[in-house]
Image (cartoon, rainbow over all chains, first blue to last red; front, side):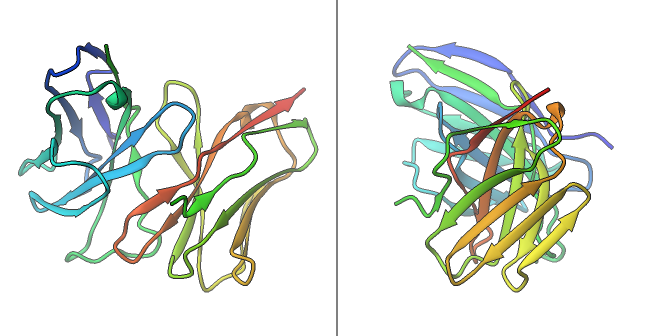
Length: 118
Length: 111
């Protein structure tokens, strides 16, 4: 059973640029969530994808967007990068059964992509 | 609006003793609470959870206690081991299924 994998692990961008981060979900998981973890803080929910559609969004502006593909992998895109976007971006997957969570519906996280915006 | 708070950024414990990590929340509609552990350069890994209808859940050395009237939960690790040294995040799940995390507590277990 493969876990959640993310790429790239580290990247540096300049203000105003665009970035795409990628995530492969754990085998058997059909839901992907993205979180932003700033230094010294806990992860903050960005959005979740289920059946290739956004299924819940946190308090992030529209320049944060995403995609989910038929194989359940996902991308996070951030346009017009700002200095405050520097953070660890975590992808997490989980299973939904007929769209319903079962029990605690534990998220399985990847190791993250560390983005630095200069 | 910090709905989940971990007020202790760090905790140091001697090997073999009990570690107690605390978490407070404000929203009484959370239905599950989870603890995650994070090592450097790795993603958070799930440790233990508790439903809002329970007050205790135990898994080996790890026990989570939930006090709904105080909106407080705690994670007890006994006995603590040096390999338990990590950042521990408390998370609460809202009715939309979103996990809301605390700021984390860095646990250091000294040999």
